Length: 187
Figure 1: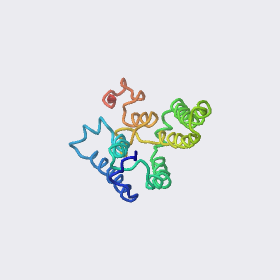
Figure 2 (figure 1 turned 180 degrees about the vertical axis):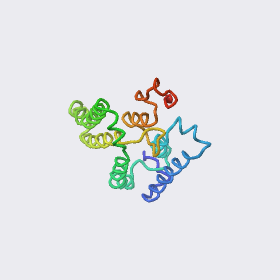
Figure 3 (figure 1 turned 90 degrees about the vertical axis):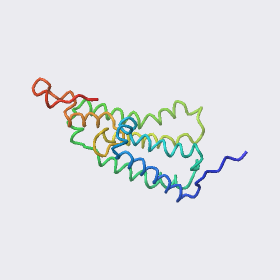
């Protein structure tokens, strides 16, 4: 039995559809009427689910040269842009414990894929090693995203959330006894 054909199969049309869908998601996140919705479900979540659901419902194909092109050219540039938006000064102000936690988490993600491959390799297909590159990429992406609610917010990871909280007076560094009016509660 043949797999059902997707509605959009031309690589340029697939790219245009995905770019337009993501553009609409991020544009909609700026609308005041949808602010409450996007406070519950961040736009980055929809950025993952809209293309996935498009494939599930047969709008885009499961495999396309457009995906290979995006992975080869757009992903490295997107990760670079994501990394240069990191507020290093705010992260450094978090102190050694937060930095140790961030480095430990990053190293755990980067080496977790190859270790899992070594442990479970006998039960996996022969080309399973290709996924370890994705895990390493995901590790770098996780430690370089912005905090929720901050300008340019994408997903928010622990060090960046803590930096955002420190900058906005909502962290443990806020001295409630000295000046309670400057401290806001984290919600």
